[in-house]
Image 1 (cartoon, helix red, strand yellow):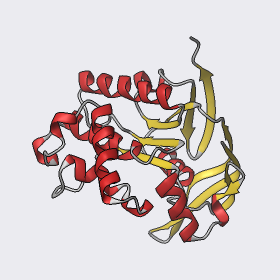
Image 2 (cartoon, helix red, strand yellow):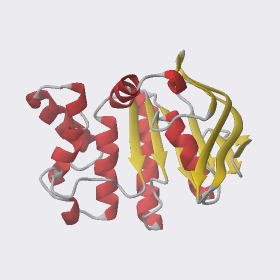
Image 3 (cartoon, helix red, strand yellow):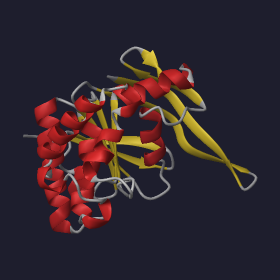
Image 4 (cartoon, helix red, strand yellow):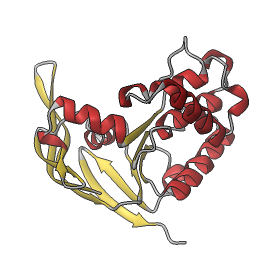
Length: 227
């Protein structure tokens, strides 16, 4: 699925150079669940952006099934993100003026999916996350957990091969966190997705097949879940 070789990412900030990811090598197997832990500023979210083609490395290669995301055109990267990669965010990133089903449908617009099919697929995606009865509600009319379920449905409606989740439970209470994690695990199993989840929460990371810890842009694989 993914092979990263010699990947570094630097930024210019306040007149100095900041290295967010430092000479990183990583392989992620097709269908694997990898959790990436680390403190704020350790580089884990930057790594997720590189995996999703939302940013480019300063050096190195980010290979996704034989294609180097680092050398693709913006048009090619947009097509990869639209068709193959689903994103789940900590802040949900829902459009406040659109209903739940319209937020989910929005993910299919770049794929030029006909309107009738968009509505059918969005309804099915909401049903899959337990929100069939909330399809017409605005984000402001939903709880935090329900908003994140809409975010997950929006990511899944594209039928991606990769799901990238950036602190997906960071804004939720413990009970709701556990509900969302159970849902993600069910989706990962049922859809045979490759799941890369960034978190600072050890309880969240412990569910993954493999755990990696980032510190100062370096990545350390710390273990594999058994059972």
